[in-house]
Length: 247
Image (tube, rainbow, N blue to C red):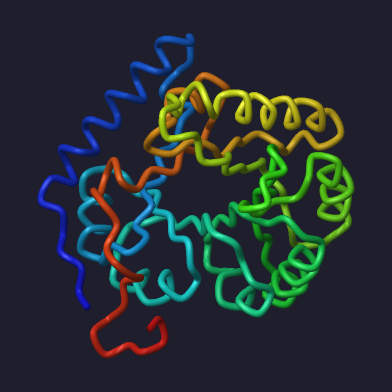
């Protein structure tokens, strides 16, 4: 199954940049402090390349398998793994320049550190926090964040550069920005609380298509946008037509 390339990736990106600029202006922020991560989940490498060619080099994937299939076919990208990372997949991503957004367990840190040391490399990660204690979301609890940061500090080869969250889905009739802003504010507060002991915590990965403005108002530095750039997701993960691994 080969996904079609949205014909208007460049114009969609232009509209996204206008939203980012307006949101930043509204809270007195510089646009330069925000990185748009174009999440290519389910979209093919041609769509991903179109985003890079339109000036958005930061691309995000949710699944290691889909990233591995797609990345060799896209040129000039900086990749982000924004979905959960299984320990047995660590060897596939560490050492490949991928920023890991969703690390939330000590065992992941240990495996990442071991692999990074074997490669004589450093792996940058973000720690995912489940700020709302939502059972449907991944992430450590706010109380577990401190010990997890200490674990990372003790783990050679691992550098924590920020925090990430995915808020609960808002109620159908709620304004997404109003519903999610308190969760983004809590992540920012956690970052500020721990920054004295962990000064490398400079990034906040939060905000998607529906709640971009709330995330930027609360200090997001990495916003993960898929639908706004590529349109609706395809029916399943992208894979080469002859690749059965992702079926």
